[in-house]
Image (cartoon, rainbow, N blue to C red; front, side):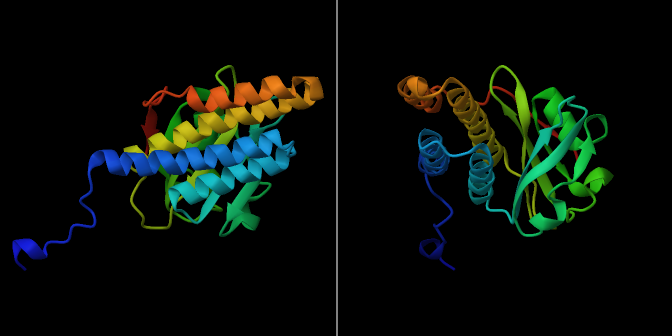
Length: 212
């Protein structure tokens, strides 16, 4: 192979790669914002969050776990992708699981399923768990699960998914606040939703923990 024959498909300018990653995240965020402004119900919004996160990460499975009233356990209420029926409804204790650690610490957590027997129903692969943090409280966790044997999620992928999780949490909270306050708040909600998408800096507010 001569120098002129070297493959160039993977050698793109850093800004170009980052722009594509940002574009996918913003597309997913605007899809969610449209659903919020259209008045979609909470279950539909959460399914959309999981679907878009799964597509962004390029993984077979994504799910959302929400706390019970006492916040002592987390239950997987939303699951999309391969094997979702097997884990939907699974409940884990906050203090004894990776889901609980991400929820309680409000930090992203990267690990492998084999490290957590409470999630033994899932295939052994890399998992990234992201807090759904509104800025005032954590409402649940979003998780994406890679294929068995796959590499851990890269810092760039983690960053994009964390930003998406943050935006999603704020938009879903906005939708619930809008539902509680009624139609008069609709115009203000639209402005707030747009500001929410534009408010994120280029770096994450919280780092990620890694276990494996």
